[in-house]
Length: 475
Ligand code: URP
Ligand code: ZN
Ligand code: ZN
Image 1 (cartoon, protein in one colour):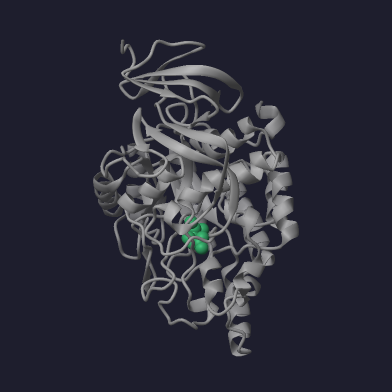
Image 2 (spheres, rainbow, N blue to C red):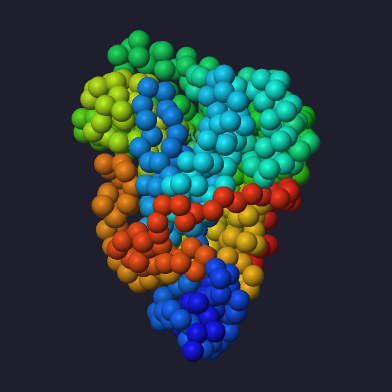
């Protein structure tokens, strides 16, 4: 007995292309066999009635990161506990440069902290906020060579945004050395102008956040950065697409053959701008950028998910505590909307919320779901086939999901350090009951069992430029 360290038996195994009943055998953290019947492993789990999916890959996660005046509340240990509890086994987070800092030193410090704390595997996007000559010409190529093959740039937010000319420099250098550039696309001056008008008129409640950051700001910036990428030869992924107009811009760019892909997040599929209008200061819990939009936008996003315009679902986990002087209340409990930190926690909720919206509500097939939350993000960011699929030779990262389990989300289930979840009270059908990282149980359905430090750094080799494929083309 015990040819395998672990066997998962009798489950419905799902990867990005098909679903079939099979046993899976694991040795030394890797999948070594997938067959109708395998002999029992040293650890033998009966998955009858369960779905066995590749561990989630979340390619937009903020951990241990500064925020102007406030503090994001998850470090690598707490943030990746939340990942494990939500069936995610790989996170791509940010090595976040602040003005004046060496990008190399920033990345080395993040690596050290992540190696101590992470309970799931991790890679880094290089968030460039100070693109000096040495950062662009010396440090960026070095770091891309070391395997940090994605970059994030911001078109808005004081202190972090880049000018268009600086974005061109980043895009050109990233293209030359083989990195993907992820973009926060919103028109800064338009938002500043609107914010000023609203504040001067005394319209300061959280709900005015949505008016200050309208779709026009996002749509314009998406169009502009597509043009910058066209001119520089860079490859881009538009982060957190919030609604129809910017999805249309992206679809048009893709039809014209531009190397542009896009992600959206569960919050754009289940929340709307109306959530900012909750009683008192509660709307602050829903302040993130770009903001959630209308019900029509929410529905429209599905069209662009189904046709492949948007092919990645990430969490944009950017957690603040609500009732906290370092969190949403940094400027008081009745602060104007423009003084409330942008960002919400979402790592643990990503899989169950998206499963419920996509699969339980019959909008997509289960294989589509797997591609959107695991396979595509792994491919887009150079982690496939080590991550993102169930195949012989791939890492033995699994989420065991009970597709019939009915559950109401609460903050305690998120296992993060925030004192709230924007999904409190959300009812799901389907929920993760166990998570395995390289064959080790890291979440048993109740408790996070993965220890800090078990997560490994993933250095990424050069990978293919993303191209649009519709859900139909991918099957
Ligand atoms: O509001 C958000 N999304 N905060 C996190 C930072 C970002 O823009 O990705
Ligand atoms: Zn962003
Ligand atoms: Zn983000």
